[in-house]
Length: 85
Image 1 (cartoon, rainbow, N blue to C red):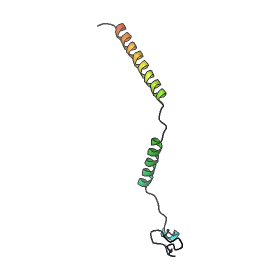
Image 2: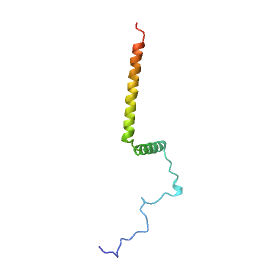
Image 3: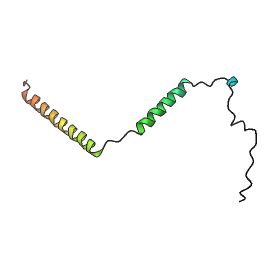
Image 4: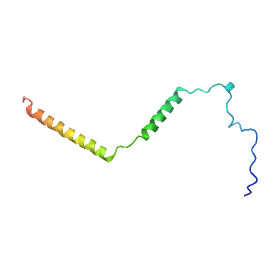
């Protein structure tokens, strides 16, 4: 491959690469565009949140088991103390 000869650039840009001039008018976002951008940002932030550690998950599970045991005990006591009809 010859190093000294490089492809020559043309002075005019293709129409795809040309920027809009201020005379072309301002491009405004629609309500749906803004809504879609907010939803995309929310999903991106939600997906990159830190995951809970194993010890945190175990503490949550143990707390749930303790709460369920307390509620069962309260229900048992309420059933025993309720007046019989």
